[in-house]
Image (cartoon, rainbow, N blue to C red; front, side, top):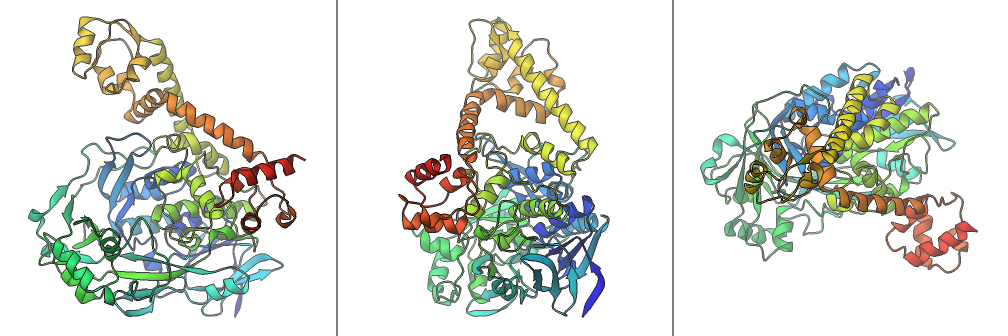
Length: 621
């Protein structure tokens, strides 16, 4: 059956975090978008941890906001706890983490979607793609209905041919209580795509009324609130604590005695699981010398009794799960509301995709989120936003944007995906960026707001606010570089409290570079300046720029050196097999990934510096 009126500019398949960002960005830019979801009641669902942010991920959320996305805005509106992680460490690894109210988060996102013009919701499963002459023209659902559009964005999460495992039992599902997406994988294979499997999992949920918090360590939120969005007027909400407990000798014994009931250890699951978020049984086996592991107890929201057992993901049988949970201090009488499970699902290795997130094989087909092999709400949302922007530009014949590694964590994430042939769920980490001191969460607006404004997702009010902030930062740095403080007894009395002393007059910028000196100290000194009137986000960034000036300049040199290789563009039609003096293995890898520049080629695993030199000589000729 075909409906002539079912014509759209863009179709988004999937209503998770990637799908929401994609649909909202496209609609706000003025395109007519169809957002398809297996269950419209689960739009923006958090199927795993009830939190947004954390190391590296908080930077992604800030980057989404700077580009004009909505995840940061929704996280700020629905938090139940805000906390800065790694606050005692350097600025490159400091991170904001928000415990979220899951239901409120979904309602807030749904409200944004329904109040945004041009978005049409449809509860259906996209099972087939319509392609003509190598270009996408539409999609079909499970009922045979056809929807037409020159661009389609796939954001299928774990639903794509998903199968859930609890013990040795399994059934087809993408998430607990939800149908899988069947048919689309076969359609992609028929189009020539390579489709593989990955695995992930989630812990059980327990009833908080059956938990004894007195045996745990309380983990409160921060008294001083920080937020994700660069927009003003963020809400001040009631915060609730998390709690910390640990696995015991009994926990480890129960797990070891039941490994024969684990689908992972019995070879029933073939997909590779996330390296940096392993199941508890995997932790026990891989880190056998560790007598205990941290387990965090997190609230799922203000209006529910459900608690999330962070760090306790498993696919062991439900009866074994009960024994495991009740071996944890404070959970001896815990009642499990929802069991833990593992899920295996299909994905498209992203080497089949370009930096724009459009596939190489089919024009107009974009992929974002877990279908690209990533893990995490933040990674998905960031990709969804980029895919939405580029799908809109593709449909309108505009130049699509590509973000560099030096511009953002999002640029690093995408470059890793399309270059490194990743075969396990990819999680954004600070260590993945060679420019992590330049790519901090505090300066995401400085790095990306201009792009968001040019694209059309940042309005004049936010843009002017950003410009004013950057002017204040510049002016404050200039003031600190020119102003001096004298070596008076009053000044040294203040400095002595922080283990510092000066024998002569010193510029404030030089004083601020000392390890023990912060803006808090400068405010205590007696001199004439308007530093005390500036917002904390400005003074924090000024402090980082001055204190880490030498390191920042060093990374800027790195960026400049790498940019030289970026200037060497590799022709799309190059025949790698005809190039002499490089190995067959290198030729195969280059032919598979087809890098656009020498810089990208240098990041492909197994490609040696000598190979890059050969390519450089060839391209120079």
